[in-house]
Image (tube, rainbow, N blue to C red; front, side, top):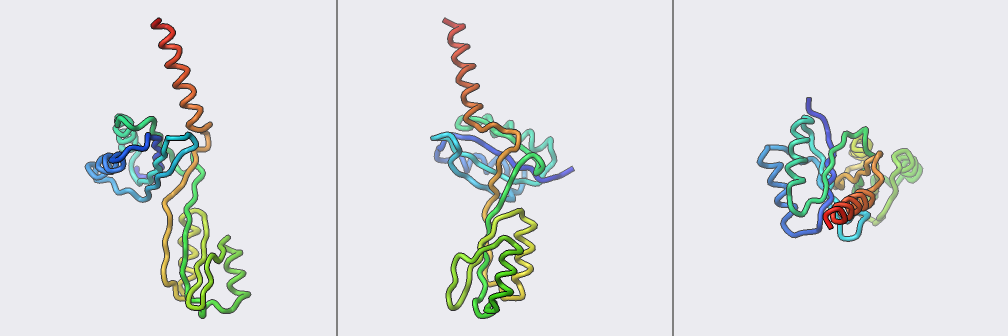
Length: 183
């Protein structure tokens, strides 16, 4: 049964790695719902966060295939219940249609949004949250004449993880022990 999975990939920051990973998904005809790359908590290590809707056995296979890439240090996959995740969204609305301040302030509070730009011709709101919350605010702002909308890719933290730096320490200790045993 298909469900949403978040794949976290820790890599060295190498040119061309993103395209190699993207090819793995396209070859299997897997649509990527969200893709984010950023530095991780470990200097020199980057983190890819990829969201797909797929069956677990397919996800497991693609994660194993990703880990075979030279520049990939480790890859994980998790369900939404196993992670804490957020997206950021910006909404652009004509200022004259939302001129009734009390209504706008209630709207902002109700959805945890804040105005980031207020101009004579438009106002831009920002909010973070789960996809459903962001989509609901789109519907609420439609009557005000939503001009433009953009959503960021997912950012996620694995609930049970102690951080990738701990995995690196374990790996370094194992390598040290191995080299000491070979001496």
